[in-house]
Image 1 (spheres, rainbow, N blue to C red):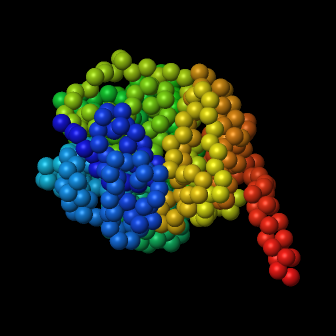
Image 2 (image 1 turned 60 degrees about the vertical axis):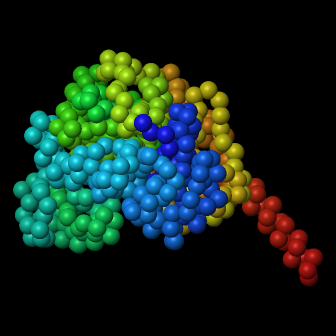
Image 3 (image 1 turned 45 degrees about the vertical axis):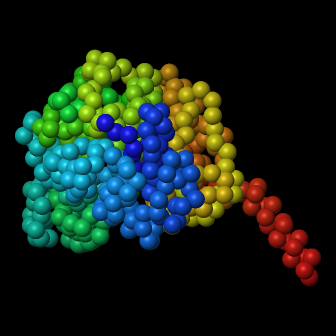
Length: 471
């Protein structure tokens, strides 16, 4: 039984979990830093408590979070994504404390959290992997391995994800220059500087399958998401289902994802990620042992609440559906509304939101933690909200997203909204002709002139009048 859930996260994912809990009749406890004390998710939770000094340390303090759960009488913890969500030590500490961890068991997290080990597991169950190496001990050994694999190659952090510790090398000179940088970045981000090599596949699609598994050996997938629209290996726009896959390839990839999950006795929600080349050959790259940012589009095309499913599985309930029950209806698109300046290398920005108006209508969903008066702190990622739309056809979904982006108003800070509008107007995107290099290749065509915010003009005039009056 699960009755009270402490949410070991912040922002939009914390609010998403709170909403799922309310529908299940469960009590929620939000943790927050001082910087997050007045944010929306804290106000919507049944209870809230300060997790610790500083903007980040508390969210990463395993034993402080578990102590707070005990103090508040929470019998379960949901980690969301990021922070401690894929930390096997955190899952194990919850298990040892008699608190339900709403995610996979610690052994599965440990097995799939190490990308080198995950590659071996995939290979053992007959799933194709990208040609690569185990951990490389030195620059010279890396250079020798890259020569055997063939350039270009990718340097990847064994313990990490999210593009950190990842570098593309097109020759040995690149490799020798970038390896120390990748190792240093991996060490800072994950506390582990282990790096391995993979063959870099040119212009692939990045496609992931949503896995759901209970504690009784039942494993299904909820179809795929195409996450190819990226910038510096950070996902920006996600689509479900993929425009690339035919039914045969989709079935083979789904079966492969299930085989990998069963090999580690996976239980709960997870994502198997693949690269797919132009010939529709697919290669396993990693597993994310948590809920994904982009879970919304899968929910929209399947009608399945993934967060509630996570909670039910963690509470010991068996899956209510089988693979044949999963039906994909229509198309969904998610745009990550980030506080960034796309025309300045997507540089993150901070500031106060002086105006906010969100779109609506049929097939429109907003997951966010932003509102008028919200001050964007400099300590966290730049995600403000996720705009998700659904259409009966791909064309309808694109047109709906364009309309919603035209309605979406966030004043006071620059966001990715105008950039996404250009993407929705781009002929190649509309035709589904994109890969992971889409943004880099089309950046010039997707550029735009920043429109002056009317609110800024009002402030400038007011300041001028005040200055004149003082004179």
